[in-house]
Amino acid sequence: MKAALVIMAAGMGSRYGGSKQVDGIGPNHEILMEYSIFDAIRAGFTKVVFIIKPEMLDLMKSLCGDRVSQMTAKNGEKVEVCYAFQDFSSVPKFYHIPTERVKPFGTAHAVLCAREFVREPFVVINADDYYGVDAFETIYQELSALPKTGFATMVGYSLCNTVSENGTVTRGVCHVTDGKLDKVVETFKLKPCADGKIHDIRDDGSAPVYADETPVSMNFWGFTPWMFEKLEAYFDAFLHTLAPDNIKAECLLPSLVGELIEKRELNVSVLHSNARWFGMTYQEDKLMVAHELKKLHEAGVYPESLR
Image 1 (cartoon, rainbow, N blue to C red):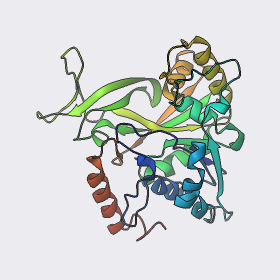
Image 2 (cartoon, rainbow, N blue to C red):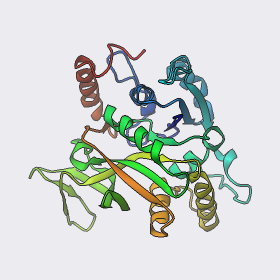
Image 3 (cartoon, rainbow, N blue to C red):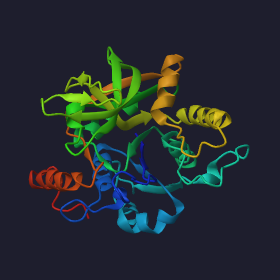
């Protein structure tokens, strides 16, 4: 089965303090998305689509795009590589973009920008996250069984495998019934605390506890091309209701998924991964991520170098 890996890499990495998507962190200066690409290709994926800002094109090609285009997929064909631009040129003409707006329009808009390159089942991931080998193998198998319309899938991670010791994180807490996603609730200030438990540090002073095994979404979604119709309608509706002076609002992929589930237009299977997710939310996370990647290379999960 042909399948595409769609990588959202146009974000600004504001909390990290730089372009963390292109920060060489592996033993041979591999960037995090190289691990996802390697894992996806050995699982069976045949195409990689980078969603980037236009000015990142040459950099992305030199960092890994040109190299990926020389890789061979599991079916024996060359891996197809495409570059989709997330910029204001893809915004519908009815919407007037405020001159003060610099921030992209969020993850739903990002995926919509890849529409012209994707004709097969596809997975959407963040560029700056490490997801684990088994996650790609599992979701590839699930994609092959998805009906063409009205169905999607996602990989859920245990909350305890996704938090940072260096500050609070936002996670999409998943409510799941019989293996199906009911809803995703964005929870904004999750942090492991001195009592050994994970708390949501709220502005009102309360700090409810979340169980370690609580499933959370790390933006690892699997869709069929049918989803692009829903993305277009959702993004148009978002822009129609956006206040002219709101220059920071984002149109988010999990919000669309939640709305479609509520309307009973989408059925989402939740796959579980025991892998430790890791990413670089804060500069202080960098040493930990580098250490974890080095261990994976030494254990033979990855070859000596991905380059």
